[in-house]
View 1 (cartoon, rainbow over the protein chains, first blue to last red):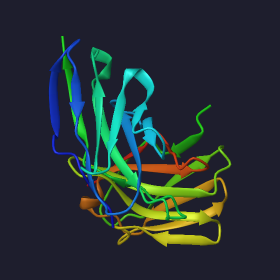
View 2: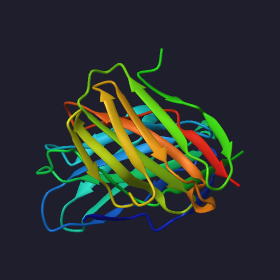
View 3: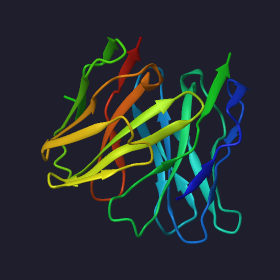
Length: 115
Length: 111
């Protein structure tokens, strides 16, 4: 099974500062990569995904992520955060060869944006 | 209207009770999933289904069962609920493009 590591369980940051949320995965083969966001009392929403092509992926709400195959990482970044970005963020991987499209999720990172 | 709905949204029950969580989707997807979310553990897969005739166990299926009544409906049952099944439960679907679409979640408390 795949393993996804989100090293930071909580990230506090001031409004308008840049932020990076880290995600590493364990796989010697290609995977599809995803970032989801969960706002308080809501389900998960897709932020962005990497299936193939450019390693820099842009998503909604100004977020972007870069796929680094050699470091097996898919870190999420935003140059300037807003209070409304306060949420929990989940990284997930899905093996391309899996016909069931199963996802393996990290443990999540809570982003707390302070005024 | 939401593409993936879950009922109930909140449920409090007692140890030993049978409980069913329901999920419906209007996205027309074949693949459906049940996850549980626990603080600090992320989401863990309980069961998944490719179609109405295909049910598969996920990584934490013990104590749970599912029923795929139709392409659009996928129910999760706890035959005899126990306190460590207190969690947030999510249903999801998946179609072309590999993206999974999540319902709003059911918060279950087992006393």
